[in-house]
Image 1: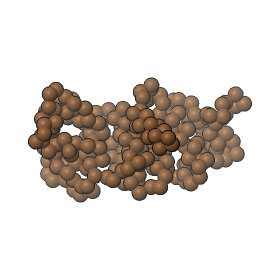
Image 2 (image 1 turned 60 degrees about the vertical axis):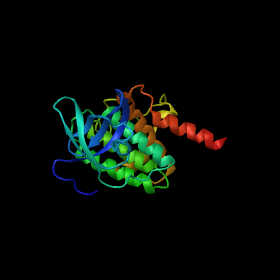
Image 3 (image 1 turned 120 degrees about the horizontal axis):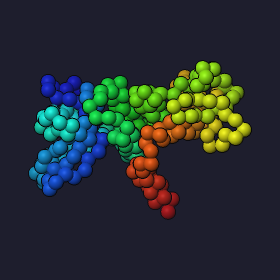
Image 4 (image 1 turned 180 degrees about the vertical axis):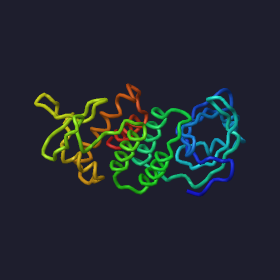
Length: 241
């Protein structure tokens, strides 16, 4: 990604909604300031060039003014071509945007996570299977938020063993599975160790990674419905009809 001009910040749009008669409220993820909420005045007018740029997956240079929590967009320019996401990759990119929109506090910098986000979008554009990209991003997001899961040791400090099953407990971490642990919550130690080594190579390991990330993210997402999942499910149903 190219370097921004002086006074501009690199950012990508997470969410846009109408505001008043002709404006929009825009949530962005910026490299230096984290999540931002901006008012884009007049961006819904026909002659405005902002509406076409204020879309997900378009790298932008932005400048704003204002001192409150919700600032005013002053200027924006495209920094690069939109990331070409289609089909499953598009829904996956929207899912990443929803995670960031719901879980990041405004005005808290996450430079490492921003880089991971940009890399993940690029990865989705070329991946035949988005699952490894999604799981790596979810784990990086949990780590950036301070909720990272120790994959090589239990909550008691014992090493994770490949031949043993575990389960995840919120605010504790990994604990030994018992006979009462449902199959849907079991996490094979071999898969956890593969995840720790960034070896998301088998479908079984990816299934475990998805299960763990869902369990770890659920307390922070709550019961919020994820629109990206709904869109993906609807798309799959239409494909099968």
